[in-house]
Image (cartoon, rainbow over all chains, first blue to last red):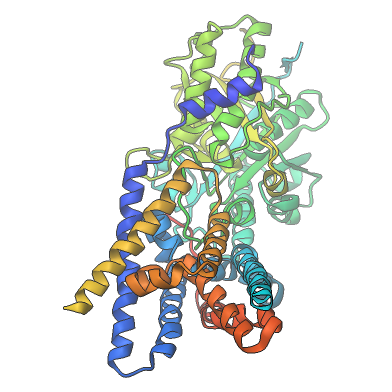
Length: 148
Length: 334
Length: 122
């Protein structure tokens, strides 16, 4: 075949059908928006039943995480996510699903090295990079306070 | 010459295909011997289920050939799991000489090449060729957890839950393995695991053109040219390339990945893949067609994408391979 | 009536963030894990420069539920801790602020993993 790798890669890429962007964006918008709207609803509900606002701020993500874990366990989440894409990935539901889904699968490798260790194969980097960037910010913030 | 003629043309005397639910729901459902709705085959893990599926395929094929496992000279088997455990456990209770193979989706052809060569040369009088893949074991190994909420691109292929088995014998009434052409690694720099068709198509092109050049045959000399698991993308690419090289395959060419599922009613993106895909199409559908006499001369070219999770994460390109096996109803002649 | 508008705002803002990220999923080869990492890091940065807090005040859960909000919580936790305890707060603040979400994900994840089994996707 008289074709070099670069030409072939370009050819393969150009002929490959791309994902339906507008449809994907619409579903992401609708589902992501619905999750956020639901969160806002229960936020107000918790306030309404006289829970302190500081607690509510933690309680809302906890509730969403609970529901995402439950629906993942029931086998519903992945079928919704297939359409929703970023709509379920970006809200904290995506983080929650990333924690529980390997745990579900790797039960067959035991509770310690299976469930315990594999829980963080996808979600681990999120915590690592979140913590590292927050520490960097903390040090810079402290330095600013000292200097100024 | 790369094409190896098998003067004693081993016969396929037994064959069987065992599949999962979605493969059974596909257009070839009547051609499979057995399926399991839950895809667990009575086991408690997906890995055990895959081994069981392969073991069932072997036993069904042996039964059709009216043989017992003891009469096999050797077993050639492979799957997608780390260290080929699916095949090792499946062959455990047969107590026969065992060769574990890794050829990704090309495994069934790889095994058929080796098995028929050794039977042709009189090393074994009978041997078994097995290959399997399971959607759940492959997802866990190569992609994401089963319940992970991800989206798949249109070029991605679904790993088939399927196993296929051939029993090859020096004696038999056919169909016969007449020629084989072992493939070489062809890597055209594709790194996208979601476009394996594009990664494997150059290997299939390499093997096919080599075969036609050396034998002087043309695509229309065959009833069917069947690639294993190129899917929609690879199918389109190989058609383009073959046409440019002066071979018109339209009318005789199909791909196992496109045949296993229904593009209209099943959401399988670019089609099926995995060792079990072409194994079950060959050992199920195609062998039944030989039986009925609707095909008499078939070129089977199974392609494999030989990456690993580590090579993918290191951003390396996907090496492709394609092994060719010619199966005919007649033992001799052209 | 203000409740209704709060929910609409959360819907529109949260949905818009997801739709924008969808462009990156479809148009780049970024894996979901990388996207989540980028979102969290972006959230920490936006929280650090003080943009995210007013954003949450405006959009409520539309801004706090996406993973950028999780990042902003980390940043806010760190700032609070450094204010109270000095430099050591840089180490303790982030996880303190986001402890609820992370612990819930681990606890419920473990709990449900014990109860349920995974199934092949359609």
